[in-house]
Image 1 (cartoon, rainbow, N blue to C red):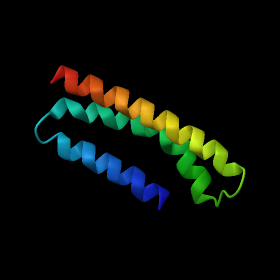
Image 2 (cartoon, rainbow, N blue to C red; image 1 turned 30 degrees about the vertical axis):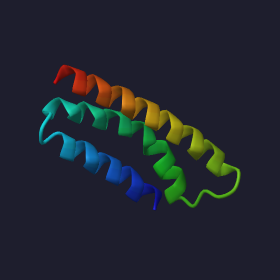
Image 3 (tube, rainbow, N blue to C red; image 1 turned 90 degrees about the horizontal axis):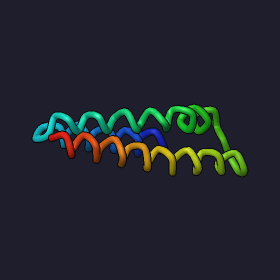
Amino acid sequence: MYFALIAISGAAIVLLAVDHSTSLIGLIGLLVALPAIRKVSKGAVGKDLIDVLGITGRTQIATALALSIGLFLA
């Protein structure tokens, strides 16, 4: 489920690129989620998910910043 939500975010950025190709820069921000995806896929539970939550927050910030830069350049 976690991976699906990250994938949907990526798909939304790709759809946005139909009108603004530079918005693809936003995909760079999703790379921050890779450690969280690894932890969740290995079955992280309980306190291990606190790290995932922190990484998810950093992913949101990085993706928003990268997408904003991409849209600014459009």
